[in-house]
Length: 99
View 1 (cartoon, rainbow, N blue to C red):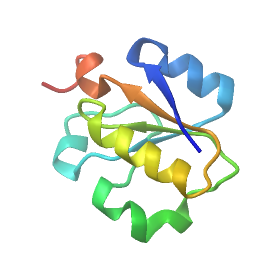
View 2 (tube, helix red, strand yellow):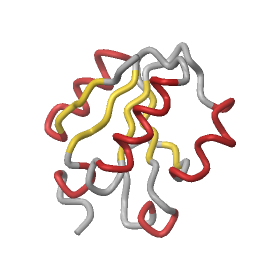
View 3 (spheres, helix red, strand yellow):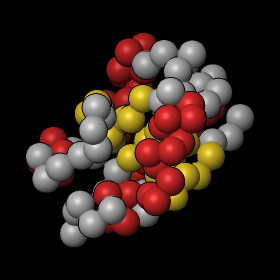
View 4 (cartoon, helix red, strand yellow):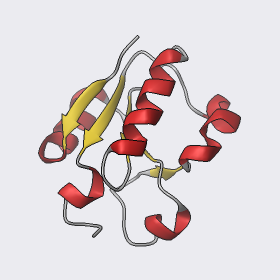
């Protein structure tokens, strides 16, 4: 299983096209700096314990500061049977929302 990479410029279109959930995998301190509309916070280290909270039937766009952690989470979700998963490349930095 694999995941898609979605550019920061295309995140909103991908969400609309796939009816996706935005999963922000940053820490709460980073989340407080701003996030995407309707995103849910689930820090990267919490994902394995909270996997049951995520539906395998819904597309998921993973987001972090730079795209590294979200890429790791997207790969983890894909390996665990989530079929429609994407990573927002460049992360919040690419949107100018985090330094």
